[in-house]
Length: 312
Figure 1 (cartoon, one colour):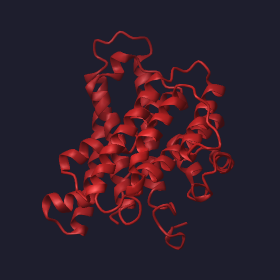
Figure 2: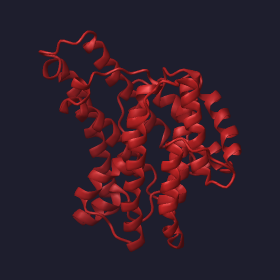
Figure 3: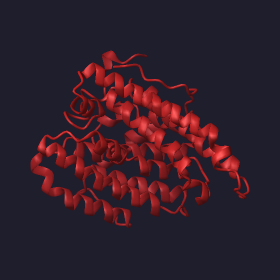
Figure 4: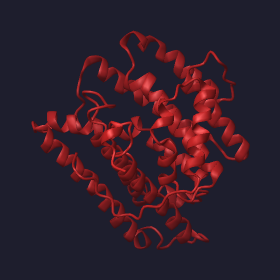
């Protein structure tokens, strides 16, 4: 695998081990099995959100676990004979987001979503979940595109994949949840600014491309990977396609840094909002954890590499 470029300082939450232990108990509670408790999700959360509180990091671990459980069962490795069940599963997720309780008969991913909702309500009962829930449902719909391509054994075009990959990787709901986990505040004038959105998109895309590099031979399968898409699109050999994806990932870092440096001139001029500069810097700073988590966790986790190959 080509080396993953990340220039940001590595910081880790002191609550990462606590999040790991909490997740193991949650996996037992949902009947999900022990696998996700062995891949270091607590460490991932601790790198992505180094300044989050203990409660916030536990919520991050629940969110990552829901995403992986759902992706594993109902997208990445969904057997063809299970495809007809997708409509019912999606409706069940929607009902849980609307407030329905889960039970022993529910899929482990759905039960994990119930635990996530309970944890958020207990910690921040006044938090508006509207945008977060909307993006979760959009993620579910995006996986249908992925499932259909896999069913046909088709490789998407580069344009299709670049647009859809952040959606199937649940980047938008993760971004919404960050406002809760990191106590972020960003006026809509700033949040909807194209340059601010470009910086956030670069961080999300970076995580997608690093994930594709690290999971090429394990999780993503034969078609849903930027390396495979580049092979088909350009007629390249695998090593050349992988090197190109590493270059694309590095480009996301440079985009983020250049946009961030330019924002005071491109965004804040003429903006009369108290604390706008500090809010914007705090919002952008939290993305450094996304870059670090992708670059440090993904190449090392047993999720994508045998334990014997994982560097200490």
